[in-house]
Image (cartoon, rainbow, N blue to C red; front, side, top):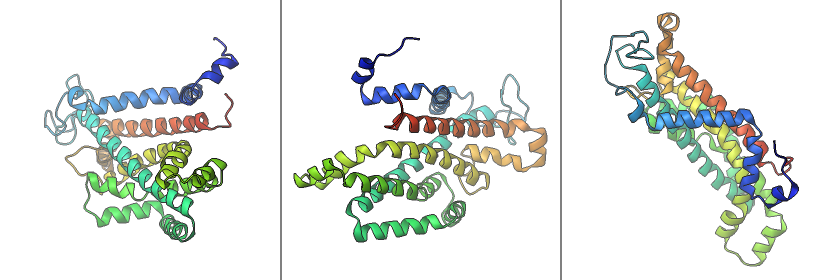
Length: 291
């Protein structure tokens, strides 16, 4: 293996440094490949899936065969086709919920950290109030109040997961606000939007990105749990959670494993892979990490 000299390391960009550090985590690199493969399969589900996910194409609860590689479900739909579309739905829920919670948390954290005073007190007390409720109970109550469905779950998870990001951003902004380069921008009369979004926010992206990976994994697990309980994505739309719903039956659990094991494996693999990627990102983005 070729040893990198000091000049090479000094001349590389920040992104190159981050990627080089990330590559040292072999498990994270493998996880990244897994996520790309599963995400690609989900994205191109209409092309890859052998059947339409809602089409009855075989016998009821048919065992895996050459025609149906993962068998058929209780009403004769191809399990492999539904699994591909279900992965797409579950990834969509996780990504959209993470985006919503990140945007809300970042905006509130920036306002609270930069302006302080009354704005900080109001936002942080509201954040503390939301965080004081048991998380899963808050999600279940919100899911029970609103009509179950794809976008309902996305919005519920998006507006429940923001407090952690808001507190994280606020803490970073409080530190950055006292630095010389921010004070210099204030003295120079730079516009507020420039200070917040061009100076402070870019220096807060690293912890936000790491935290967002954990929110993504948690959102996918929450969607699976809610759909399993019948309060999430509703049939006939396939999601990994409602595909696991059949495991409520002892017969399915013991004698028809093809109806729930594939969905369970995909959930476990995706969540573990995302968490491994998040751990590697945390180390790669750490300014104190050894090069």
